[in-house]
Length: 336
Image (cartoon, rainbow, N blue to C red):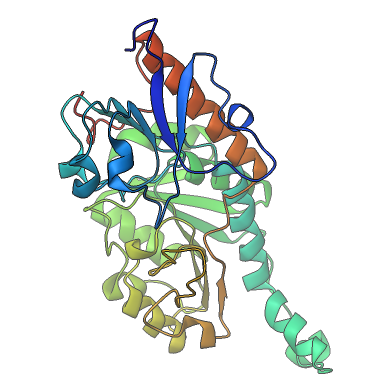
């Protein structure tokens, strides 16, 4: 908590063009803003000297070594896998912000329809003057109604997707780690299964499989060869969560051999680190496969998500200044 004569010093990346800091971070308390150039989502470690708050998605030991007054790391995002748990200094609380479930769920249903109806393939083919996807030549297409939508992880994204899938008159099934969300899921009109047997059931019965669990040690490589072989050859995998939850090579092999029908991937295995580098998103050429939709981690990046997250971060800055508990505290990372 800051005293009345000493506002919090907050390190932030540059605000978007056309916006002032006050418009971007609508705090009600007095704050000393310190805008820094971020490279690979990180400020220069020395810029953290004298800072009370860091607004960022990344935190490393090199950054921690320069912190002499840090009180909070506020993540304007949901994922926290780029925060090194061992780097968080004593006395520092870590909190995140969600608010991306609505646009991600819209993306999920959009790609589900696109995959099932071969929309992107048909568009490319028709632009070339071909009629390969004309029903008189291709045959009939499937529909989402009455199919099974499987979800791994029943957090905010999973619940929102379940709501939309129910609106499509689909059967919705969920795999969770524990029984904790069973009643909540059933109240939502969702069949809930948990543990290893529940996971196998959802993998084997789903026509569409959504990955919506955070990336933590327990979920890294959660979907590998053994899991993918349980899926039906007519099923699709949809991953807007984190790339490394699904084993990279296992997924490529399954798609290349068409042991599953296809996939939509919004999260990658490799990312840019600067403003102009253009790395391929994987070691494997997913982009050469016709049964994949790939987008550059954009599913939740809407104006609505941006504004809602900024409001949550701003409120947490106000709470910190007032000595009040923060929202969305990540207990496994915080050392306050």
